[in-house]
Image 1 (cartoon, rainbow, N blue to C red):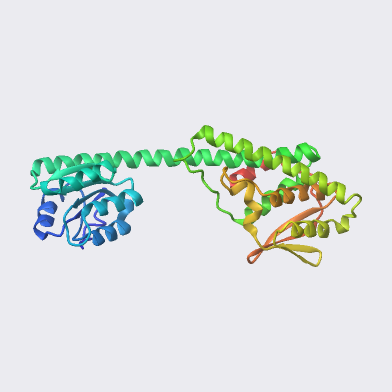
Image 2 (cartoon, rainbow, N blue to C red; image 1 turned 180 degrees about the vertical axis):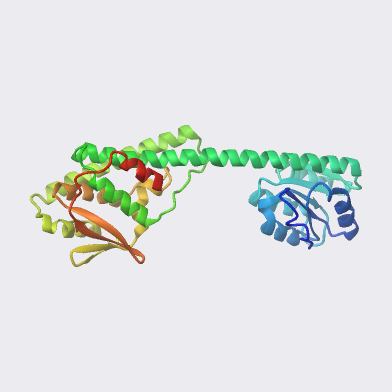
Length: 333
């Protein structure tokens, strides 16, 4: 397996796999001036090259008939794991049935018959490299676009938390939102991107609408239940009361003096981080409702990271927050 040219320059590399040493030398001599060429002598070596250099490979050329697995297996492997790579099968006429099958399955872009016409081979590889560049540009633009859409989705969710707080306890009450978002940041949960192969933007909007509406309704119901169940709860007992309610709901929360520890931090970011197709649990809705309920009792929570857990301790609610505080939080997600 030859990787000598793997770091030659930033030009997309070509992988050529063939068990015939003469064909490898012939290919390198004909194509080496167009791009770095990495070579292998079997399907397994080709897979290893893909796994080592897949991000910078633009074109894969494989012979069909080799010891062990056939070349179309290598092209199938590449199509599943590295779909940006332009895949070319080269073979003799006797393997035309397998070639047609590979084309029909979408595993190859082009079939080049042996023996090669060097002028035609160079033209084919030049066009394949150009196509690889176009795919790379397209994928980069797509990633940037989807990144913006994902950022917008998270920002909309943060805005909904603020809207719920303003609707349920008053527009001037920002402390529960502050605590909720601070805990979510400490949880360090990774945002789940939508499956853009299965969803378009209208699907995303529809899913977010249903998910957010259900979440908001559950938060409101949970807040009403807390108010009804704990009428006149003393401020000093409020934190312990909420910790008991969260533990009773099945969350991994444990008391520690006048505070409590949350042993599953990722659950604190469930609404913000999970995909729109995932319904928000009633336990998470209870968490936000609990913060709103605490605020009504004149109590706030201050979260801090302690190892693999997050500790919540009672604190005095803050009175004033900057007008751009919500925007500051959005930038952190």
